[in-house]
Image 1 (cartoon, rainbow, N blue to C red):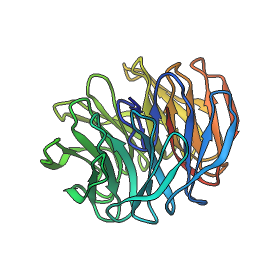
Image 2 (tube, one colour):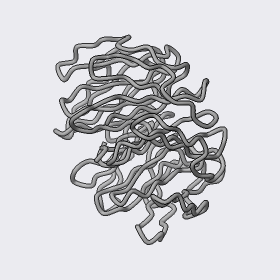
Image 3 (cartoon, rainbow, N blue to C red):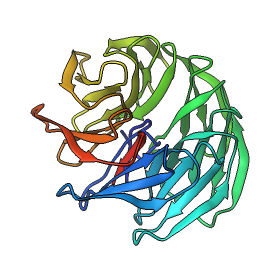
Image 4 (spheres, rainbow, N blue to C red):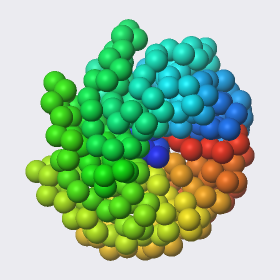
Length: 309
């Protein structure tokens, strides 16, 4: 299954701003300017416009069969692309201005709709519940835990919402740092947010106990991801860096310098970290030892979401 982390991707089922997966490990990014998806092979071979999708795609997620889905902020839709690259540009119509996207273990797709303050749910057959759940104000990131609970970061309220698989909503499940954007979940069920206004990461236990300033990171963190050892990484849009936080909370604020204005972040099964660099239209690659290739791949203009399968 794709591992979640975020602009969204992480712990299971990519939320949109980052994701990890074993085996083949092609990398996909959304180009919000061109309305396309780029594909990069493990060798770094790039197809910049691999698929044309709906307007202003942001988050991206991949199901267990390798189908790619994008949350199209400008079109209020979800696009679906098969592994062969066959595109259904408007696979589903969802709430207004979807940003993050995630997939559960049954193949249901969820979008977090920034302007509507809702979460949409789409079954594998494409049946849509546009307002499946109403969450906090201006939601951006979305993640799903191993029990199927859905979490959103609500930038307008500085909160995290929790929705059970049955659709029961706790709109203010936890209060976190200001401007939460990306969200990720570790293997123990702890939830982490990247807070773009306070330059911090928050940590919330499965019981909902929040440490609003768990770690101080680089300027304007957007994406957040977790590796298999439990290390947390943030993509710092304002600093063009990646921060690394150990499970004990030890922070290296400028662990790596990457391309200009990173938003999405993802980690492969070997522990390599990748960022989607919005202002540079590139992907950076960082090895587990911290060796950086700043312009590892050139992708479509204004990349935001990144996922690995």
